[in-house]
Length: 254
Image (tube, rainbow, N blue to C red; front, side):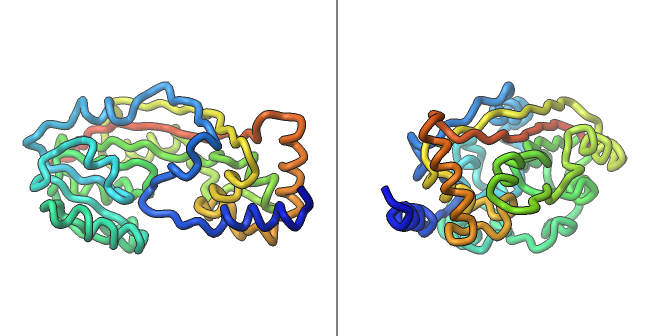
């Protein structure tokens, strides 16, 4: 296939829409290494039906709904406009409290509102989580670390440097301890991520724009051609992810 046809093909992937946090468009075009922990199992160990729950950065609410927590005891936050609209349409009619956030340092809830706060891949302020969490309340978060896809980002984006170079488990544990949390569990891992075609990389990089700043097929075409040549001798394009998980209890005084 000549370069013009390749560019046209990749531009189709670049133009595909994305909603919620659903990567099903890449089914059979990539594979992720499993993490050594299960976020859902860990948080469900702390989640009871009578507890007031907040899901920070719920996306489209897909994961939240799988927990089957009582809707009237559930609240969510979301910052990205398309997902806010999706939550208003999908979650609010169920009785779930939907709030938009504009600033990680200000959650739109009163003090001591929640028994448990969960957060998967959403930015947070430890002191603000402390404020809205009840004494002895639990915070469970799985996060994307500083080195997530950095090796692939460097191949596509000239002069790339990680946006949050201090985002490692050890630093975040220290922050939580300083904000009056007791650490219940922490783990960190660097799983592989394999892409089986360049178009899958294009789709992914276009969505994860904070890891691939300025990416487009036009701007990065030479780099994409290099990946295309690599696939002629290798079965996949490899990237390395970075994940960590924390469960912590709020030990502030009443």
